[in-house]
Length: 423
Image (cartoon, rainbow, N blue to C red; front, side, top):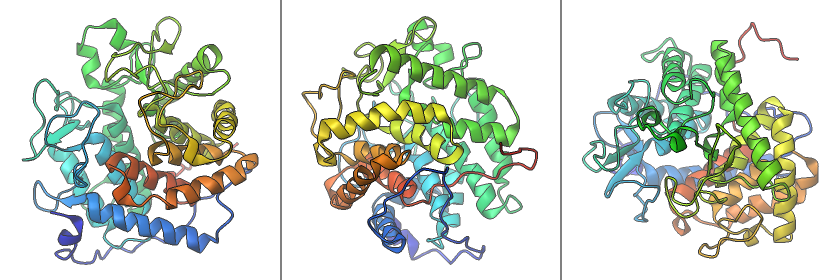
């Protein structure tokens, strides 16, 4: 049932709606400046409404909401089971989008709470604080060989961050104690999705029982949510989050120095973390391009870029400088010319197209770190507006919306505890 049908049955949420306010990003960062703020917001809200009508679904129980990844009729990849309904990655995205659009959507809290209830209904087998990564039509977890009851690290990281934002947005005195639930997810991530000794992000909770050193010492670049990790430290005062963040930046620096010095590109998967971090071999986990800048790594500039925009981490700034310069040069400052995947030396992957919003939107976030990218950032925003939702699939459309949230100034960070003194 599409969200537009479900909406008719919803009453207006009586919770006071927060203002649709802009976030103050780190000094010296930029936003698109060729359009008035009101127009950026109008375009964001229009695409959000299209996305919500298409993908947000009330299903699988009373008041439950989920992001239906096959709602557009396009195939879903990423190792998902046939007849996949949703995945934890999509669920995390949906929770982030709902809480950050709360100032523009009176249904946002109802949707967010319904998504949280769905998350509770589908725990990973390892821990109720993690989400089973893959559900199929009928609402059951996917079975063997898809491991639907296992977790995927990215979805859990986003769910925890979204719960922290919900605590900031609506408070935790209602039916759901968002802060307590966020801390439960963070605790489970540390226990099951972070390497105990090496402090890198694991691919999921299943890695500890995999008994495969190659997998144990591998990580996924799209999980490099360094701003999330810092927010988790601020929320918990647990310095293990700083260790994970530092380890992530060490991996990034090592790959860029030894494998992508000129391009700034990052591979989908990185292996040999117990030796010298290296691009993964072909077919490590998902396919032939596991060691290339492909559909997973497309998210890397967005994930790392946020750490500079929100917290001013210079490691993020240094990592993204080469990527921004190379992307502008290789396309002649034309976003449409950016290919959907590259070898780390900058050669386009031969079996892919170009101009997918999955790649372009993340480049927009990366461009925001420096004023010399202003024309490039403006061109990226305009390129995205020329791509209507039916032209792309769930993945590209959702990453476009997430990127637009950042570029328009509406990506939020959680409350900063009173004990924390900003330097």
